[in-house]
Image (cartoon, rainbow, N blue to C red):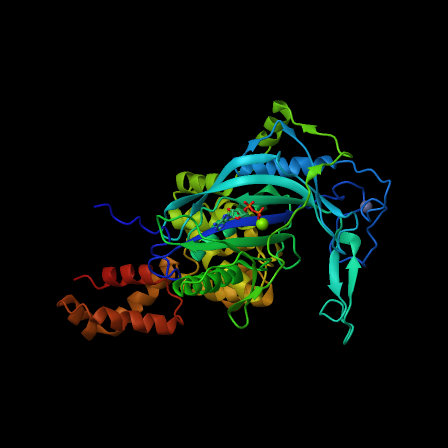
Length: 499
Ligand code: ADP
Ligand code: MG
Ligand code: ZN
């Protein structure tokens, strides 16, 4: 008897028993080049509408595009970082369709000869296992203009029922990354996307701001019984956070499972997730019978990338998160968890390395960067690079902790004061007399005086009543307002109380 194939969604709390969910992603990354893809208009976000435009990106007839070399370089970086083969010969296609945000009447994209193919990303899952997601292709294309609904939040014209077109975005370079349908649970999807974003962040090719649309993500989802062919997929469009995307996938998986359990069929269409209601709704569309009439763009010459060029770009790639994590484990002796957290974000990694270099204690630095420091960033809604507590400032505090001037508890209090006052750890400790008393001579004198004043308890201790030690510790702590170094005090008391 052959057993049923196991569902690769197994273990996911959100995929119904007996089913396997299948997901593949199309991710659009807006490149942060200075100028647009085929003209010299600046790429920028938030400028006055229709100020960064020219006849080319407005789609006037008779204009001729010229490829921005930076776009090619950035796209090659992305494709290489995702372990793709770089096509030695690549061309642009016209993808024809009509929409008000597309003045040319076509998007310049790549069709059957994309820049990169056959890559992968190794995604670390929550249980520590590594899951390889195939990258089908990486290609370049230009972005459309932006439609602003006059009555909407951006348009802000009360009651208006028309839309306005802002062509500033028209012709902005994009890279599209298409994954294989290799993802089987919403939790995996989130891990994949987060790690993909972390990887892209190291490459410094995009600001990756999801709210501003510089990272856009479409998810394809289907359901089937393991061992049977893949099901019909729907597409969850344009989610603007990975958390919502995960929740949207959970809701869509449940919806599809319900449809299939009823014996009905999933229809290939676009679905929309509303985070406030937690529900998906179907955007009944014209079906997926697109015919874009792709054909090679006669205005653009084919691109032949020679090996030397590709190898030059490869050699200039920065250290990627996976390699950095390895290095943290190897060189700093950090546990895998710490190394993973700290290496994921480029700025956090730089911050940590600077602190660890100054303090010369990697684990202590890691604990603080991941703990109190990250907690402060979250609470203040700040990014690492905007933190008012720089690495040198944090390192100064950790020095005081390391040399025993501050206990861990005190260091936490000082850190809070540093955030509140903007003063350095040393200043705070000096001004408020917060230091721990670690001076042997001072404590020794106090201990000697105390023991002499309480001969009774001292004798009890010598008879073996260990508990009496607490009595002496308490007295000194009271006298020093808790600032005596506890370890040192303990040692000195035991010495003084010896028979
Ligand atoms: P299209 O260009 O029409 O969107 P593609 O074949 O390029 O179609 O696939 C787009 C995305 O859909 C890819 O990320 C792919 O992994 C994913 N995909 C394909 N088939 C399925 C399926 N049955 N279930 C889920 N995702 C799928
Ligand atoms: Mg698609
Ligand atoms: Zn232009």
